[in-house]
Length: 244
Image (tube, rainbow, N blue to C red; front, side):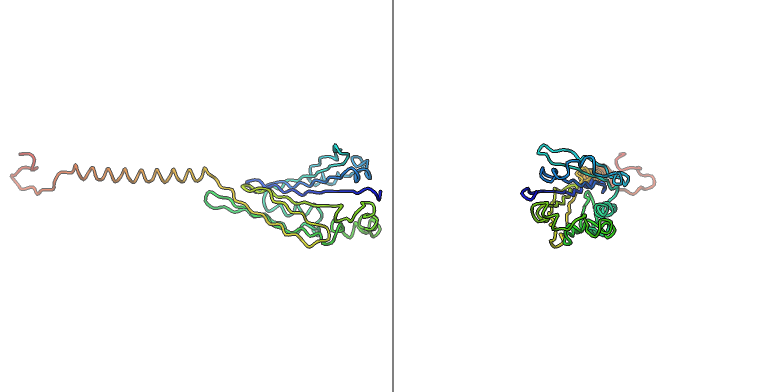
C-alpha cells in the first residue's frame, strides 16, 4: 500500500443557462490504486440522502483503467439559488463560501457575474463538521491524517485535487484549482450574452421610421408644388384667376 500512490480528483462544475438557471455537478474520480482500496464502492456508497435532497446520482462506474467515477448533479431554478446549492456540497460552513450569481439586462444584452470563495486552508477536514468528528471518535475520517497520507502514498494536498469550473452564457469556460492547505481561492467569472435579433429589430424600426419621415416630407413638398397661387376675390370678377 505504501509503494502505491493514490489519486483522487474532484471537479465542481457550475453551468449557467441564459435565464439564470443552471446545474451544479460534482464529479469524483479515483484512479486504479485508490479504487483498489474500495473495491465495493458501488455497493457501499450511501447516496439515498443525496437523492432525497434532489441530487441526481450517476455511478459509481468502473473506468477502463480500473478506477471509479461517481457524480452528483443538482439544478438551481434561478440565479439566487446557486449559493444554497453549492452550500449543500460541503455544508454551509464548508469551503464553498459566499457564492452568488448576478444577472442584469440592458438593451440587446444580458450580463452575468459569478463570484465566491473556495477555502481549503483547513485541509481535508474542511469537508466535515463537529458532529461528524464526534461520531468518528475525534478524527474527521476515522483515522489520523498521518495514516491517511501513509495510505495515499503521498501528502494529501497532492493525492486529493480539486477543480472548479464555470460556464456562463456568452462566455467560455473558466477554471481554478484550489489546493488543500493553501490560501482561499477567489472565484470570479463574467460574461455578456448579446441578442442579435434585438439589434436587428431596432435597426429595422429605425429604417421604417426614417422611411416614414422621408415619405411625409415628400408628400408635403408635392402638395406645395401643386397648390394654386393665392388670390383675392373681388365681387363681379372671376372667382379664380385661371377661369378667364
